[in-house]
Length: 610
Image (cartoon, rainbow, N blue to C red; front, side, top):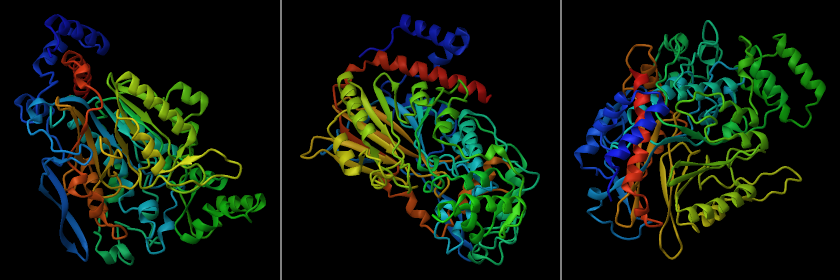
């Protein structure tokens, strides 16, 4: 099929120049110099040239980050290993793939998938880290040695997404990015703003006091990793390094961000719904978060921060607790600067904050609309391209527990939306925080009658619609890809779960939908390490600190860090499935016009980098 004619190209460039406030004489040659690539295959020189034009591509196609030798005790540093190629998976396709497909393929959508970024204000009184004191059993939720370095990791991951703004497979420009939950780790408004600003390309300042005020700086908190002197606790015994400057470096300067290069969309995670993704927010927790006292013992945390969950705790006792805390009379607490910016947000705040954003990369609301704000509805749909529609769900339980389910209102809405997508002839992607392994939490308050659907019923519904090709999610902090096959054969869809930015391997992914022009569709997943080197240097810049964070995370003895990488079939893959309709409806000219829009947007992003 022919692409754009010269006249059509000139008209498109003129319109794009006006939309992006770029002179035609600048934009035209730039767009003409790079291939539109509706077809360029993985082995084509045009695809490689476009990818190379964006600079280094820090994906695991080039190299991997692995654990190295033990340095002290049980503590290991990290090393680089060889890259990993794409591995084809035929589970859904059900038959051998056409060996000539690489020469014919064309990219329909190239997007970044971020999730479980867990931005952490490590000095916040609302961060109740002492919950991990007993054998570090909840380390993955309440405390990590790398907590103060989370903004630096997010900035490093955003840089990787920017560096990978052209597909390493086809050279196609990035269309969008999606975020599938758990950004603000401890429900703090400051954490929420940091995540939005970093994705938008704004710097954030982690210096909330003149010196670092938190458990990692306090000798009394022997259960925590205290980088100035880890001796006397489990982290010192394990062999964690002595890094006397680390906490000062973590807050010494604002964290810069290059920003995502394409529009980004988001959905709720359990950490944006309940405290620690598990507990409701009572008045004592809200007061603690903005107050001037921070707990460093399990007893102090349990007696006050979680006291509101005891049925015997009355209004009088809560008042006495608050007074004792304000006067510094509660044992197990230290004074810190009070800060109203650490207020715990509610559901409406979360959506509203996404409207406080930059116009570029956009969109304002990041999936949420004014209708969401007015009705309180927390799910949405959007067209990422003229032929790919995405549906953002809220699978979080509002009552208790980290796992989720699909409320009947969303179940019915999504079913109707997939009917419409089928009628419109567009491909469908579903976004949610929870995956099929964790979609079974049916906890409800007395009198709450809405049915909550679990994974089995939800997957069965999705399998009714061939246009449903991919389900992107997270929650379990590991790379995992599952095939959901239609009973009796005849296709199905792929469930794609990405790792997190807080736990090793601190990876996210790129996802690309490709038309093989042979009646099949491929979904390529490319695992992405953040841009920091595998081995940290001695400086205090954000990339060095992000590198240190990854190394600390890899020594999590309470979990199994290497397991979170997933198998080779969960990382760099080609996921094949039958095309749900004749993809030749998407003409090369229409696809080239889409890529022109996306490349113009990337040129605007690149201008901001220079």
